Figure 1 (tube, helix red, strand yellow):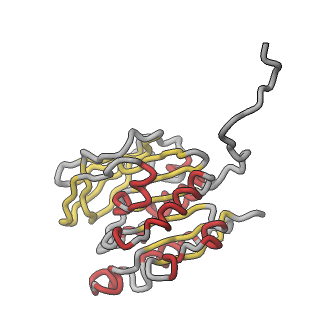
Figure 2: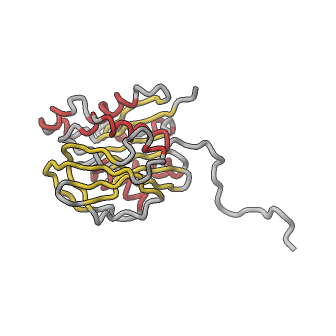
Figure 3: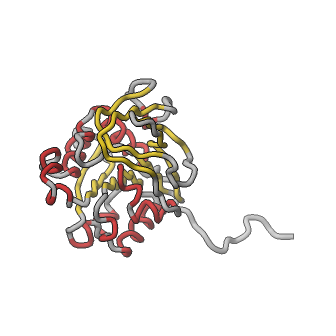
Length: 242
């Protein structure tokens, strides 16, 4: 069996600087995600962090990655533009990308979206109700048919300045009244991208079963389809030109 090779990328700054985050994710958000993904026999999981050489995303690592998961928040500006371009090229060539929570504002996600990706936010610990608006989508497999709830989360709200998604799998409502498109699918050249909203660093969101199910499903959805490599430029005529 050929396994899907997954790299979980995390800034790994909050956990080192803020005790309240380290209390929730003592080994780092990336290790929490890698642990539950590692229970899937079809996945081969590795991690990378911001302060490693080349942010842990060397050519060797990227070329051996089928799906890259990205979590970032406080250090978007510290990601080198050269690495951003390498990641974008790999997505165009077929690597899947899953952007989690504040990765909406990462250089990588904004590069691939072409918009500001800005939104409204409020970090007061509200209930989030994640509505499953495409229950037949593979990313929604195994979830309750209508919605699931996250007890405490940071609020993100519309207007969310992203391009119209190819598919919207989830829409979230918050106890304070806001709503946001929270599960968005895109295709960029040969690569597939999924943005999933939950995952603020001070809440144990990534330990919740439904959230783990979504991310695991998204990895399988975003994996390369092994189709023919696209070619561009001048093309010879298939038939004689009269």
